[in-house]
Length: 103
Image 1 (tube, rainbow, N blue to C red):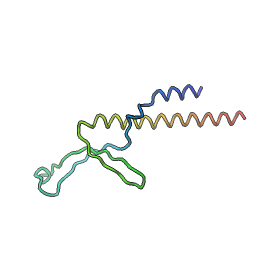
Image 2: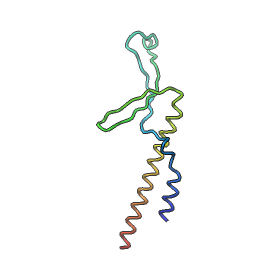
Image 3: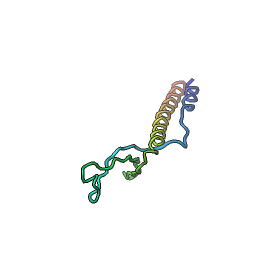
Image 4: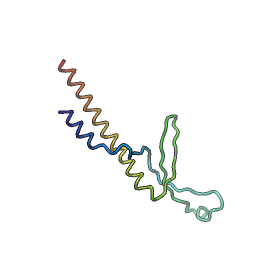
């Protein structure tokens, strides 16, 4: 029974080539000198993809408005993948537990 549930879960997995790990941030950049917009307090709103790596390094990538839908979709796919993998792992753990009780 659990094997069928696992098979149904694997069908819900997103395309693995269409995932992206990180966080989408909306920030305002302000130049120190030479920018009238920044001098007036406005600044420049930008979207950033922030991705953490081992050693606590965070890489930031500035995105264009046109990239936002694709980035949001891929980030969502990554979260969906994580959720489904956790569910599959839990079902596999339960299977191991059931086999152990039977022996």
